[in-house]
Image (cartoon, rainbow, N blue to C red; front, side, top):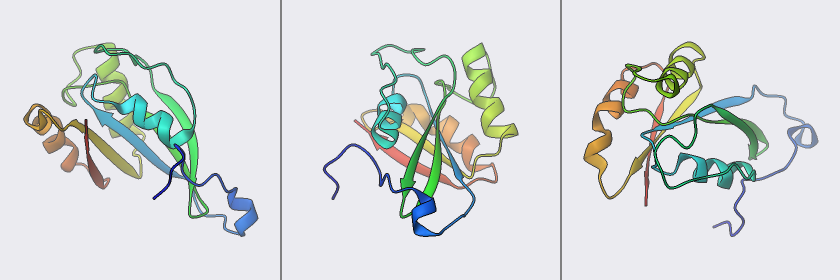
Length: 135
């Protein structure tokens, strides 16, 4: 198990691999820890706050895992893919129109039932979905 807060920072040019960068979208309701996970994976320090709507635009960072380059996208919080606010529109448009390679659905482990609707919508899309329960 890694003790650092980042994935492998090895440059893919050093390994001789030139595979496509995988785009990983972090999606979930407001205030479930998406930005904290983003900071952990990328080593960046996006400001996090303990209130809904803290992230109001998408942020992108890079991580490497097993020599593979990952583009991690921290999306604003959304309750569904039916956008009712500018933040939700940004998240929906990225997930639907930018077609990430993987969507990581970040869910509050204390209240997972609150995220079931968004999770069910994400599962209908072509991209694989990884469920992350966060405390």
